[in-house]
Image (cartoon, rainbow, N blue to C red; front, side, top):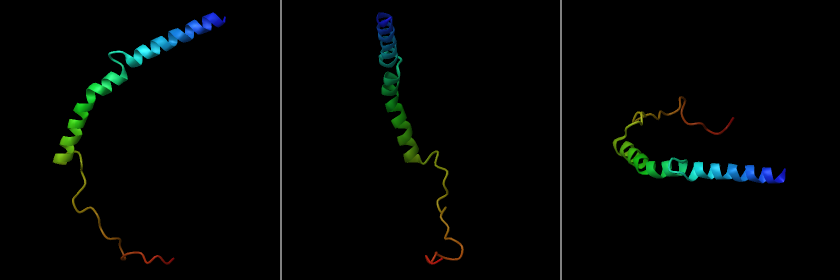
Length: 70
């Protein structure tokens, strides 16, 4: 029973490591897509695209600033 357990565990570890370290695994995908993502973020920051905040969004609170007293 122990031998079967060790073999199943080794097989599972082998398949799991193959999935993560393989050519289409998440590590390679993130490694290849990082420059594209960086370029998109940089272009959005430089042009202001996808930031829908009005320039003068802050308004003073009604009734003036709070005094801090209850």
